[in-house]
Amino acid sequence: MSRADTLIPLLEAPWRDHDGEQLPVTALPPLAGESIKQLDSQWSGTLTATMRKLLQRSCGVSGTPLGCIDFTGCRYPQEPLAIFRPSITLTIDDEGRRWIAEVGRNRGLPGPVWCVFPQPEVAMFVDRSLAHFTGWRKNTVAGIDADACQCSH
Image (tube, rainbow, N blue to C red; front, side, top):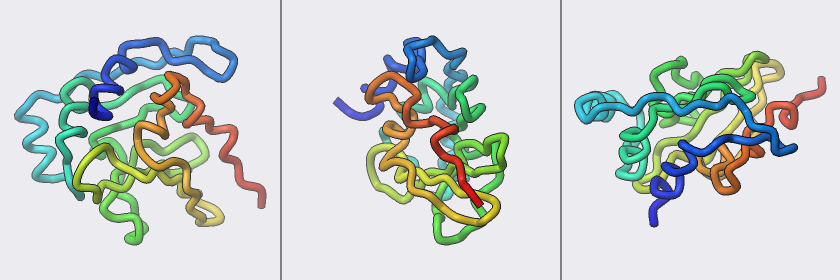
């Protein structure tokens, strides 16, 4: 079973916080085949078979603690720090932190996932893949707990 096969049923299940409360997370619409082909021509890294399969089911999720998470890399600006390229920006939270995933893998889902703070400009490793970041392993949003990612100056 591929990572996409694991993720697809969980896109349809309710998302829960640490306390088991249901969150208003909603899977966004899928991309059509032609849109995926067009995305592939613009993708900054490798659009793997697993990622294609995920995009055929959903282009992202809305209502997460971090806001809308975009699986296409089209909603938010490209990561300005060249050391993380190729990558996609998954979301930019209310604090201006950029949540990015590297897309240089030849198979599987994007990863690792990083949180890049605006001030001070620091990058923090978050998780090893998009699947782990979103918490789909456990069907919770434990992996995207914005409160756990605070920076003290």
